[in-house]
Amino acid sequence: MMDDIEIFILDSPDTEPPLYASKEAAGADVRARIEASIVLEPGATKLIPTGLFFEIPEGYEIQVRPRSGLAFKHGVTVLNTPGTIDSDYRGELGVILINHGKLPFVVEPNMRIAQLIVAKVIRATFLKRGELAETARGGGGFGSSGTN
Image (cartoon, rainbow, N blue to C red):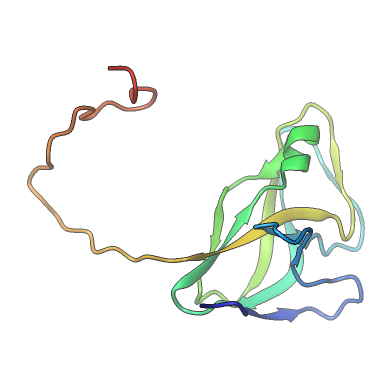
């Protein structure tokens, strides 16, 4: 069982490690490591630094997910949800925010901007086949499940 992930934090009194907001929270909040407010106009995206670097054990990943309050109240979410931090990545975690709302949104220094989920990785072997087994759904795409 893996419980610890080594992190490096850029020197700043405001930069905190990811923190779970409650005893049973699945996601640990991360904060914006910015010196001044950033305005995110409607439809705009910005890469927000966190000041955090991770040493994730092999066989695990960290998923970057939106905070539900930002999404519900402001239409602000993480663009590549869930974003994946691979175990061999050693660069700074940057969170890509997008404003789907109708009003500008201000990202403040030290604001909680995303949450992290630690997950086990299962790597598959992809086997090339001439054809696949038939199913009732077949090649039915978007919106096709549960219609028969």
